[in-house]
Each structure stands twice: as structure tokens, then as C-alpha cells.
Amino acid sequence: MGINLAYAEIYMAMANIFRRYGGAESAGREGSFELFETTKEDVEIAADMFIPFVKKGSKGIRVFVK
Image (cartoon, rainbow, N blue to C red; front, side, top):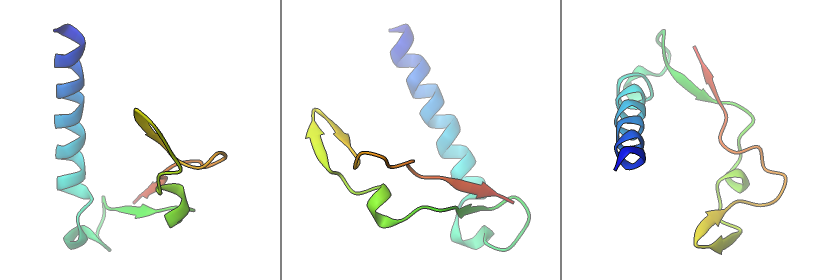
């Protein structure tokens, strides 16, 4: 139960951060997120082996925090 509770708390904390600072209404103001060197290919699923994987060599989703 310990690891599952830890994951749940991490997901809740990350959701709170993105809800507070990552929405469209926060664009342009201090404390907002902006995509950095991220394309559609970086998030498209290339293989599904129980856990979805992106294409090889992808750096994943990267954001710039203002």
C-alpha cells in the first residue's frame, strides 16, 4: 500500500501544480508553463508493451517555467 499511496500523492501534487500554473488562462503571466522544443512526435505512442512508449530518441515533454 505504501508505494501506491506515494504515487497517488505525487499525482495529486502534480495535478495541483499544473492546474494552478499550467492553464491557458495563466499564459503570459508570471509562473506559467510553455512547451520547449517539444513536437507532436515526442508524445505520440510508437509501441505498446503494457506501458506505452514514445519513439526512440525522444526527449519527452519539456516545459519552460516562467
